[in-house]
Amino acid sequence: MMIMTWMVLFTPPAFAADSLDLEGTTITGSQELPKALHIVPWKSSEAGDLAGRPLNSLVDEILAPIDRDVFLRELEYYEAVHSSE
Image 1 (cartoon, rainbow, N blue to C red):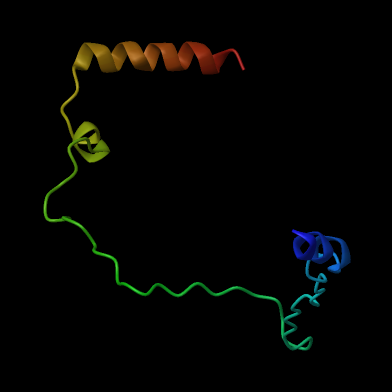
Image 2: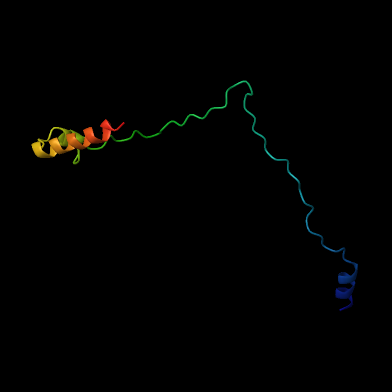
């Protein structure tokens, strides 16, 4: 028991390991080059299915036949609006 007491009393205290300060890493490129980012795809993209026509197309609306009465009414409205200017 005396040996145990002697070991506890006279053993130097255990301290935590000294901290180690490391310098940060600095990456410096060539200062003469312009700062630009080029993203290059590593995989080619697929074009998708472009075989058919789109479902809604303005070409169909433009080439659709018009009603004569509706067209004349639109002309009257247009002339009424633009004649006052």
